[in-house]
Length: 88
Image 1 (cartoon, rainbow, N blue to C red):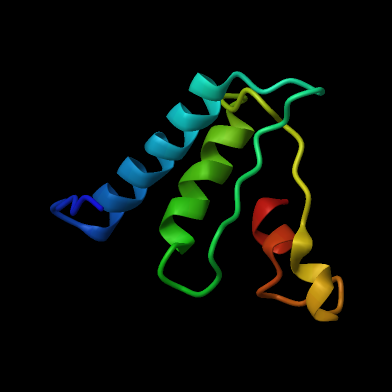
Image 2: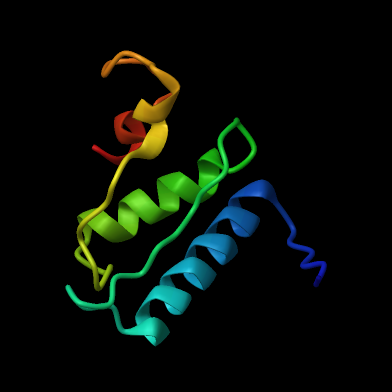
């Protein structure tokens, strides 16, 4: 494990999102070889998720499909903490 120290929460969020995007890009996903990413829930990673959404909206992500697995927890579709609410 590495400890990465950044000056602020915003800087850390950008760093983490750029690392995730680099891993996706380096993997070179395709329909036959999708990149699978499991993301934690809670308030700590929200800044990173906002950065990933920004990359997504700017078409910077190589793979534009996602699968929301939070439905396994029997939450309603409009539940405010459901992952798809952040991604849309």
